[in-house]
Image (cartoon, rainbow, N blue to C red; front, top):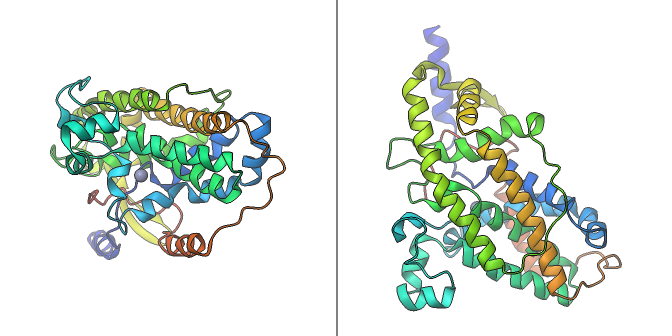
Length: 327
Ligand SMILES: [Zn+2]
């Protein structure tokens, strides 16, 4: 028995320390995938044809995160750095916020709502000129940032429970729970995409919801861990040929129950938001004909970047719940 545990412990030490990712690869891929089916027929015909691309490239921004300096702040915003809810001291418009706080300070605490606005405009432009490659690339990546804005811990500076002795909670909420429950128990029949009249206002509303929920995410796990047998909180599992230590199935289900469906609700809301932003870009671009768009062509630079990012692809389902977020 002791030998067995020792071998497991040594195996665990041999697992490389990997960075953690927003929504996990699984979550981002599912969100972009399901969003396609909320689109009207004029868009669906094109998006469904390229659903593999939209799914695969939903995680490019995370793969880029540790290589490109400017990338990291685009995935979160530490709302608690701006006082208390509803954070009235922080101007919602980028130009007003820059005027008040300066670019460096804003970047230091994350810029996700404004980056969503930038990406939405770029997508609109790509639609206007009917550039199939850019439409797909921007749709895939816009989906990523929108989904991140829906994650409560992406709106808190205590994003991995590092200030409260809860390291690992980031991946617990956004990767472990969905991977365990989404496929079998959650419902992703959501209806149709809606037109977003004011994208910036819309994404700010989602960010404020995330900020308001972040306290619950942390507090409930703290309470649960206090009443749960410590020996049963984690389990060793083999994934992609490696033994890893992760939150046990029982503990994951208990936490999800305590959150009362929060993760599923945020995932559903993410899917709706992603589809609605794609749809809005298309409407604002004058509803270009997508049905007849040819195969996407990518520049040599795009192709080179795809190849580089692909090399950063970890084995499927390898999201490391056990490693602390290092950002
Ligand atoms: Zn991200």
